[in-house]
Amino acid sequence: MSHTPATALVWRKSTYSAGNGGECVEVATLPDGGRAVRDSKDPDGPVLHFTTAEWIAFLAGVRNGEFDD
Image (tube, rainbow, N blue to C red; front, side):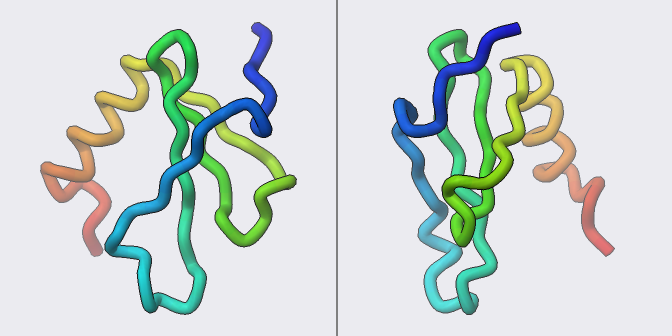
């Protein structure tokens, strides 16, 4: 599987991340509709790639509170 280089992606950070001491992730939409995720403090570091289906399942889990402590 080939991945779009991280430098070619348009990264965005949630407005909720403001004022949290830099503990943020950034998300970019991939050409195939999936998503890439990286640590905003390490833009040259590792990037996680998710298919569209994986991203939709993750968001559903967040909305349903599956990751709440």
